[in-house]
Length: 226
Image (tube, rainbow, N blue to C red; front, side, top):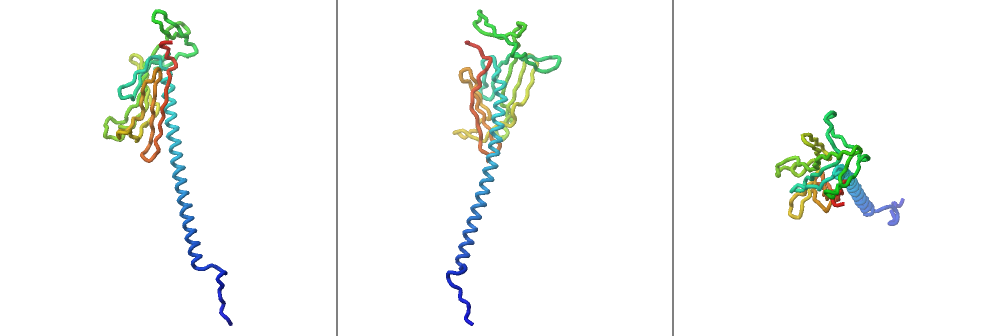
């Protein structure tokens, strides 16, 4: 009986099997790497979306307050707070809470002696005015502390001896630095004509992509010069 002889064109040689195995391993490694990168990108995208949402929410709350301004804004020397006066707010000593006269009842009047406008309520009484401060309050006063670069965005309304504060947005800050290597503040206010210009930066960790906003807020009730 003649021994069986394998023809070169039939079956697979050991070299072909090894080459196929190497190709399979390379393709598998690339696929796993791509899946890992896609997962990391997805996680980063979710984090970025969360930061953007927090940033826009903080700006929206701040804008809703500052747009009610009546007086020329006063910015602190470090640019982290702004003082304005807001119309129609008064402290109800009975309920121990702040109340606002319905803007639908406001009437704009003109005083020729001062060449300026003012507002009255439906009964002809001049609207009350309250002081308001929106500020970025650092979590620490120690420049060497990491918490020094993060703070809460707060709002304080006061009139006479009555004052109330609350947090508009917590933990605002960033790890970003300027060209000189100094950390950016979480909030910076500046004046641009009659508008309040706001720069807001937010970053939760060093590994996250920082997000920032820059916008102007026009005071709705600012009538000087009209």
